[in-house]
Image (cartoon, rainbow, N blue to C red; front, side):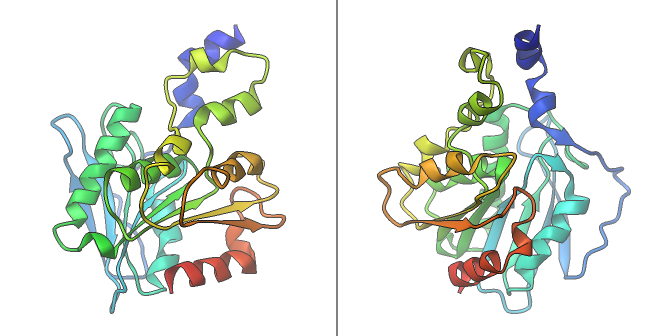
Length: 248
């Protein structure tokens, strides 16, 4: 019964969206534009495009699996403070975004946002940033394009790797409909890669992220945050030092 539940309800385990009324107004500290992008007929992607005063480039940010842009837009203001433009999107079913979820759809929407940025930025001005769930989309885009760099915060080797850790007695490989194989994508990424992971992560095991550093990939820098958990790396000085060094 547990195995059947894992198969039929895995989206409810992986994706924890909250929704927003279309009339909701974001209260943000920096100049921004709210976007409604249409990657296909039956989908609508809500995004916030922050504009820094003298931008060093732009960060395309893919957030974690819980919440919506009312939370994540405020989190990404951290990078606007560092003089970067930021584009952060809500996945389908999150916030004001609409459409049917699937791994393929998430990749398609991610590429649509990347292509949107190409209208105003060169590829060597685009930094891809993925956090937790969003590391799958960021890694996929880095493989398919030529961005300036890729930053992964609390990434997984693959969803299968995390599922095996959580449900060790079940044949999870045959049950999964989502895979996000970061390890495959990073092997084909040409830009510099920075990985930041807390050693006490209780959601995505540190060991899962650490395995990515053991791949035969050049220009990969793995940064451990001693004692860091999944959602509190911003509380550590080592995280801020790492971001300053990566974005300098």
